[in-house]
Amino acid sequence: MRLPKSEPAVVLEQVTWAQQPHIAALIIIEAFLILFFLKDRIFFFREVIPCLQRWRALVSLEHNLQQARNRDRLALVMSPVIVLCLQGCQMLNHSLVWITVVLLAWYILRLFLYLLIPHRLVNSEYWSACRNSMNFLLSELACLWLVSIAFSLLFSLPLPARASLLCIEAALCLLFLFVRQFQILSSQCGSFRAFLYLCGLEIIPVVGLVIILVFV
Image (cartoon, rainbow, N blue to C red; front, side, top):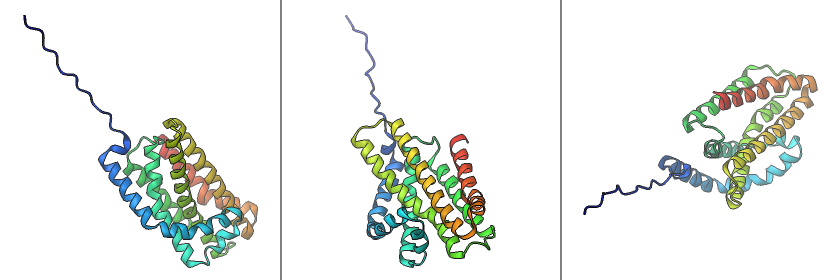
């Protein structure tokens, strides 16, 4: 008597996001970059607390060329972390290339706005401080997200909760940045003009960025 042959069961292991070859390679490269610039990160840390406490520290940072270069360099190094987190935590369902292109286009647009919008009432140093404060936000937000993800993994937070946590942190950091930029501008041209400047330079572009990232 011959028994019917049954096909062997094939178990397919689900590959997680971080286990994808190109994602794993990008994470490793970014980890090496962070380690390579760790000294700059530690050196810049003493500037973080004053900038969080008062807006004048952001203006004073423009005087310190070494620390200003550190700030801009760290923003460049840490920006890929933001892109990876946006996709890895399923905050966005787009490819890494698409997210990167959209974020880069937004950043270039705001630089053009700072160049094109006249600012006779605002000192050039204060204008630069307002523009470059976004670099401060990008580097610190990336660090905050890394710490948050580490704690999320430690306490086994589900992915939706992790994404919500990062969204809340990003919103609070942007709100903090807008307040600091408003304080910088209003010290030069008054509250009403500062609000108009802030809407044209930062708020409207950020709202447009969020709409594109979420709904397109």
